[in-house]
Image 1: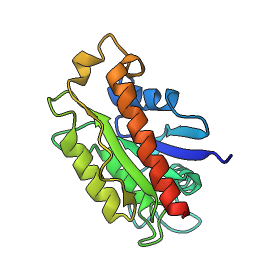
Image 2: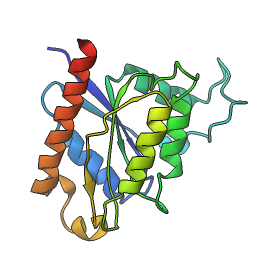
Image 3: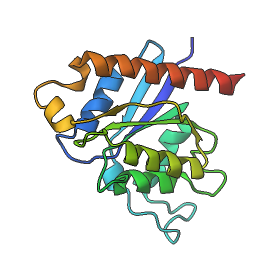
Amino acid sequence: MTTNTVLTLVGSLRAGSTNAQLAEAIQLNAPEQVDVVIHESLGNIPFYNEDIDVEGQVPAAAAALRAAANDADTLLLVTPEYNGTVPAPLKNAIDWLSRPFGAGALSGKPTAVVGTAFGQYGGVWAQDEARKAVGIAGAKVLEDVKLAVPGSMVRFAEVHPKDDAEVVEQIKGVFEALAEARTADAA
């Protein structure tokens, strides 16, 4: 049986990030035959600039991100909400993955967006913005995949998301949707 690789991009660079913890919980709860790869270096990627996006001269961190996305079967974006929108590192990653226009690493790639935030809605504005950006960039956005955990700083102060039964159950739904999207693409 073949393995499904899910490239996971976490929008928060903070060491104690609840979104990084959510990504870990997702990785730990992956079904058999699913390899969740958390891309660790979004903070090392320079801001997108067409002047440095030249074949043979693409910065190493951006080239590694593109290679990882090309090798993945599906993408999962895990985003906090900064000032009502998606954080710069995640948006920058989307920008790098969108090029070359119409043929970037996101082109047709099934992509889901989830996350957690301190606010009462769990970062849904940022998730909506990320879905919009990644869709415009060419990804096949899984609009029905929803996982927004509110009150993250309090909820996960003493409990890791991997130990939160409600979150783990929702993670299963994310994997089911990703599997359905991959199966639909293979058909």
